[in-house]
Structures are given as C-alpha cells and as structure tokens.
Image 1 (cartoon, one colour):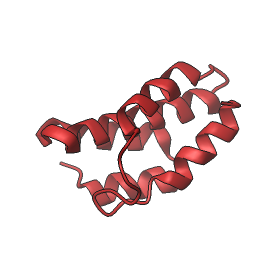
Image 2 (cartoon, rainbow, N blue to C red):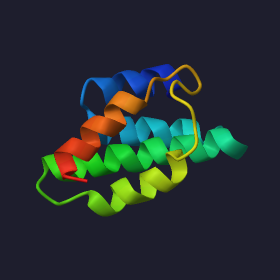
Image 3 (tube, rainbow, N blue to C red):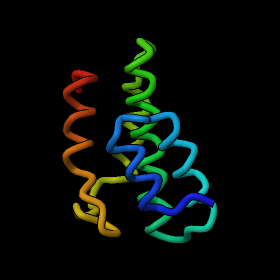
Length: 93
C-alpha cells in the first residue's frame, strides 16, 4: 500500500494519474476529515490529469473545491494550496 508521502511525491512530480491511484489506496483507510481531504486531492489529481489529456477537468476541480474548502494548508503536513492554485490557473477557474 502506498503511503501518503509517496502519493504526495507523485502529485508534486506531475504524475497525476499515478497520484490519483496512490491516494485512493491511502483514502480507503482514512476516516472523517482526513478522508474528505484525501477525496479532495484525488479529485484535484483527476482534474489535472484530464486537463493534460485535453478532456476538461473543471467539473472535478469544482468537486475538489467542495472537499478542500475550509481546510488549512498545510494539512496532514501537505502544502496543497500551491497545487490548487496551479490547477485553477490551468483550468481557467
């Protein structure tokens, strides 16, 4: 099973599909607010992957916003805000 730090490393490298898969592994074990946070990151990874493939991604970005809204950055030691801002720029949100 992937650890959160391994999944985050994939995300930061721009390997969004792999990050999505790894984050799902971590998400399965999570509960509560941590689970909601991981869902947000999974949706964010999906949005960025879709954008790279020219298939939009704005819908997943909006879903991610609902999950991440109100959570601090860093959260669980992950400074997610810069990737969020990059995704918003890329998708024109």
